[in-house]
Length: 206
Image (cartoon, rainbow, N blue to C red; front, side, top):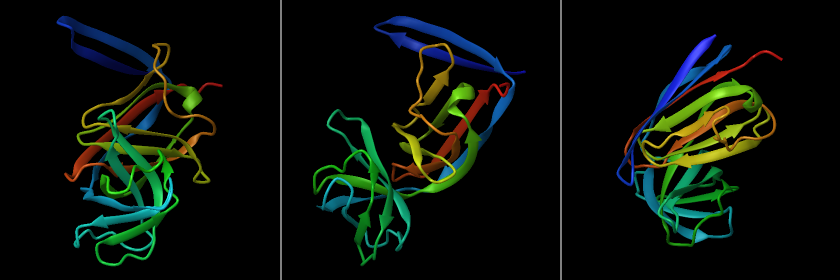
């Protein structure tokens, strides 16, 4: 059996918090530690609909035709929001058209955004077998969990340093449903290069 311990420390309204969650499981979700290139700042210059539009980025953005990107912005509540799996069309200088963005509906035209080319990690696990899961980045990160046929079974965006956490039996939930996860698509929501890490445990017994 493999052990895991997650510790929560800090304070709430001046009351100290120091709690630990310990679990064991028979299998390991292979850990990931990857670097994510800096995103490109710009604006949503044209909003065709909830899923399609045109970005205006700096002239040296480097995003090319056919790339798959995530688009990040700040929601009304001050939290990060993102749309993912947007397919870049024919780029013309600073103008980057895209179609098919999934996830959160695009914001209003002229909204400031950060666009990042997605990377794909090969991570195989079944959400129903997980015992512990944790993922985080030192910058804003967008995560899209997909099946073997590239269908999304859940997504999440987290602010810098904030984790996506699941511990069985502790009241946590994960934004993953349906078929087993075959891949994790990631993108950096910051204009600063970032480091992403992920680990987990699962029970393999049926």
